[in-house]
Length: 406
Image (cartoon, rainbow, N blue to C red; front, side, top):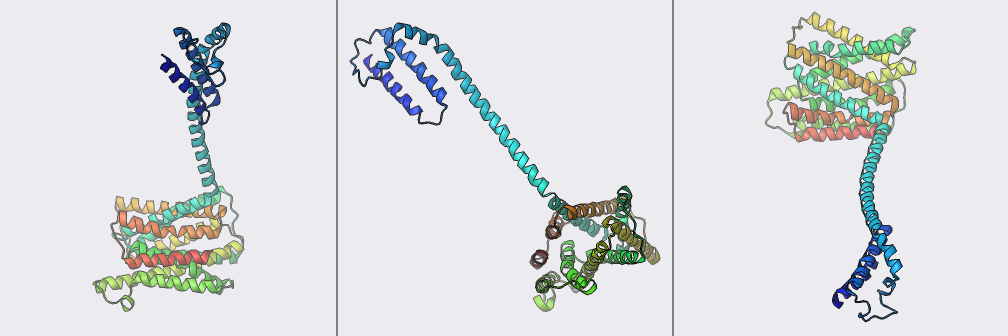
């Protein structure tokens, strides 16, 4: 029995080690009190207090040898102590669960603030995704429809939608003849841009066509220098050369990379498609310049979008009817054409809103993700894998776009 008492004493001394842990101090104190009461009961039960040899100075049992009244009073507190321990344990688990909920709410709030602060960039990413989707849809349509027929259909929703926005926001109409001249010029460039883009997609892969079209960012600097007399910086020449190098990689000319197993007809189609893409890039650069001039004249961008798309639809419809190449599309073709038109309108709206809340530099850089989206969807949906030279050319052109925008 003496050994049992010594073991109890060792357990009692070990309670001091709990104080070094990260537990609740109140919880530790309650455990200690409960243990003391149990030890007193055991000593009195066996009537061994007088027979146990003790050192009064260092004996840990000395504080436990209290009067009978103190023993009874503390005995009545044992039940309440156990209840308190249970409540503390339950409160600890409750606090832990509440802490997890608070951490989740905090994470959601931080995520919401981040998205709110980057609202413009998210719109730019959406615009890039819609433009890539439109390129893939057009690539599918030109396999069965004439490219001239795709042009007016792809812009009809943009014309109607932009007209609704102009009416809803009560946009003031231009009054001078000079304003309408600049509007007509930008409408013609939108028509030529759409024409070249659609025809380039009928000759080369969508990824290569979109990659070359983004050289318009470099060409816009030269067109602004020629037409608007804006200064032209040296680094724009450097990045323009880098973009030209990217075009060379995409076009993969035989006089640079040597002869390969590609058929002569495929090489001719590639060169024709690259030529149309460069023509589209030049048209886009002119359109950037004309729209910039319109903003200087105070013309609202929504009215500019409506006027440009209207001119493009009229010219495209007249061209396809005059050429006699209009054929009645099937239900699938008509559905894809309307989807293409809707996607293009959504992309234009997202780009318009992004430019209102975000810097032009960041929006321009973000739009280059369009190239990545196009290559990815081309591989996943159309099962077309591009060569390594196309990826290198795309990387060079993306670098040039980012560099000239900073």
